[in-house]
Length: 159
Image 1 (cartoon, rainbow, N blue to C red):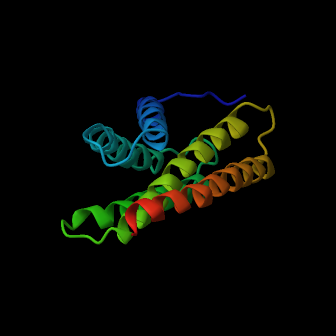
Image 2 (spheres, rainbow, N blue to C red):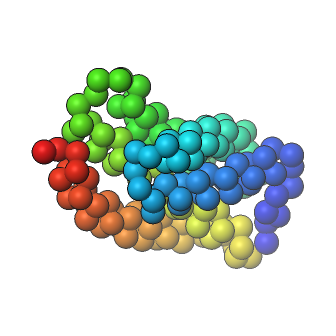
């Protein structure tokens, strides 16, 4: 079994991931647009930037740039794209749906990364096929949830 955390950067990555998972989960299941949502959202965004940045410096699984690094870049892009609509003060309401879509996928990616990390580190023989399967299951379930929620978002934001 691989060590879960064996460097200072690994601990930093682990702690920022816990913060991101807690804040991301809070945001998913609580009202949107409130002051609390925005405050917790900024903590989420900041922790995700730190988390993905730290992930780019960790090479103890394969020793080289690999799939987890590519996913960290994808996580950063999803986060940035999700925040773009909020940078404009006079944004049309329909673009808030765009924000919700990408931020939900940002959290889904975080959940998938968590389960993928466990599926690589826990077994004696790590399986990238298992990573693909659990990631696919998480994104399938999450996408069903997002498509269901999109109807609610559109009726709320697009009138």
